[in-house]
Image 1 (cartoon, rainbow, N blue to C red):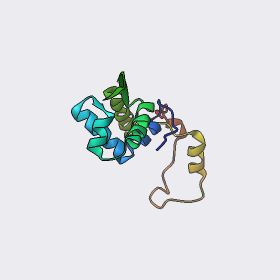
Image 2: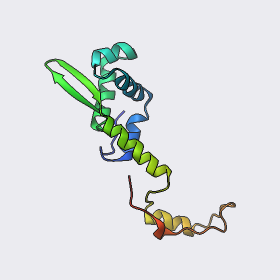
Image 3: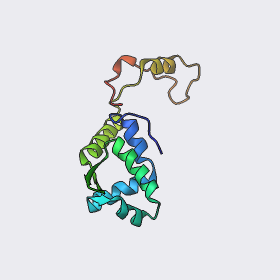
Image 4: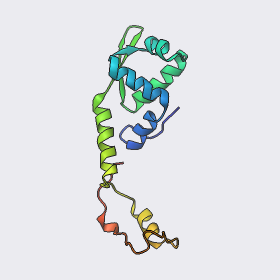
Amino acid sequence: MRTTANTKSLEGGLKALAEPTRLLIITLLAKYGELCVGQLVDALKIPQAGVSQHLKVLRYQGIVEVDREGQWAYYNLVPEKINDLVGRLKTLASGNYSIPRGVTSRLITTSIAHPRSANSQFDPDHLTPSIL
């Protein structure tokens, strides 16, 4: 369940959201707002320790935040983080991202010719700053 990527990376956010239970937790928080662990345990029908571990991953990535009142912990979605991840995905999908030069040069010099791109040339100087 652990995601090792830092909280600023697209990879870390996507890893956190890639797990179905965490995605369901996000959906519940988006629909109902602030929820406590007990409510999520009842809704998801998984042990409290499991819910807490999922919330820990989401918190580490900045996708949810916690508000503590005594023994109670209330979790909220951080919409700005979701919007940031969506924006980064859109940038990635539009082709405005950076590929490390070593990867590009290896692709250019590969001895494996792709039949559909045998005549195309790669321009490594046509890369933009990384979003990852």
